[in-house]
Image (tube, rainbow, N blue to C red):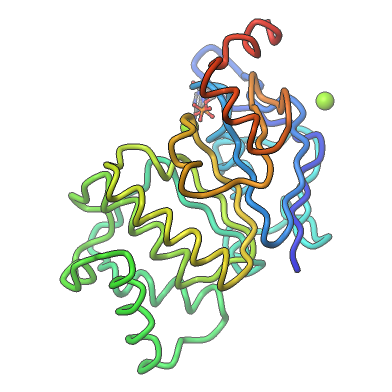
Length: 252
Ligand code: ADP
Ligand code: MG
Ligand code: MG
């Protein structure tokens, strides 16, 4: 049982025009087994929230707290956060030149679990996870994200999640750029992880489409750097019909 608690989180970023506050008091709690959809318009700060929790150096936390199982996450290095059970699938995954998917996964698994995985079971686990995600075995020998299509990048993120078995996973626009088949395959991966490991999921998305495949327990409307409204799955349906205009008007 894990719990991620975000309390009145404020964060800024340096821009050419000066320091800009992006997160303006985020409150959110995610427990094992729960899926929270974070839905909001472009530029509302969703990715900033993901990066701030993951420890990206560009974003400065100016006040508030993030606790994972009661421990201060903001005091931890990025590696320590991963070892504590946090996983981030980025909206725009970065290339890792000269490092194959296979080596990357093994290094990441070793870093997260504190010891190298036993080779025989590991090879089997990787193969099984790749099969599930309908990934060509040859993919394992390619360099991370180098020339990957949008869909391949997203599958690779979910592959990492399935193998690293985090307690809390933040998935930032894992649905973007996927065709219907890829969306279904990626969603099945998330649902497998939910079933097998009880992972708590923060599912960041602009569109309701992925919520047809991954059922959220809670929906949070994210506008102008904070949660503007919360509800159950029915809130996503309202957003589908009404859009974000009402919330944007209220925020300005
Ligand atoms: P979302 O993911 O909801 O679309 P982002 O978190 O990416 O929103 O961005 C929120 C706001 O913060 C935007 O106005 C964006 O331009 C700004 N922003 C985010 N990161 C940076 C950065 N590194 N430098 C300058 N501005 C940034
Ligand atoms: Mg505040
Ligand atoms: Mg974003």
